Length: 279
Image (tube, rainbow, N blue to C red; front, side, top):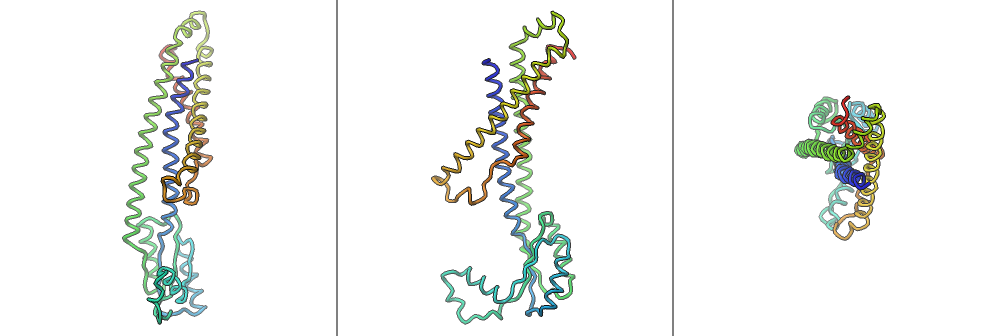
């Protein structure tokens, strides 16, 4: 009984580390997705567009591959935004008329078109549209953002791979110790003529249940830590994690952890049994 508790506890702890990593990774990916929405292309015009001209250009730009949304910003809207950014210093804009600001299209791109190469290709296509005079897209910011994104994904893949290998090693050796502690039982069953399947089946089922129990406990503990963090984060953080979008693991990740835990238990038992029972 004690050995089984130790095995389940080891699987729980190992998968809790992996699930903590997944929780951080999922929320970083969510934050990166929100940041990527800032990848925006702005088209400026020297004059106020007539309704027909505006509709034609809007249609041509919207038809380009990768466009998610096109917003028209008039001179009056541009001035209003300018004033909102100078909140408390509006007197600096006294006497300034909307006519000094250009009208523009603000183009939001689809997620698959927010990398550096796709943005540059899109801008090149955009400049070929008749009637467009100037295009800006924050080239330096886009380059830095994509470099950061690539770095985070490589780091996440390396850390994730290391954690998975470590968990497999720990769980496999723990189950080996469990099987080893019952080697006499295996030898007796073999001597009385029990078939290989009859000998293996209980241990494989036990490994499966241990893995499932360990993964379920790790998810419960993770949820408890998540709730504890949410309710106490105000004491040491300057922002509210709830309003900032901090979320728990999606259902597919939870299902994956349950599957991984039960699979680790089953495969760990199967490989450990080979030492005592020849296939």
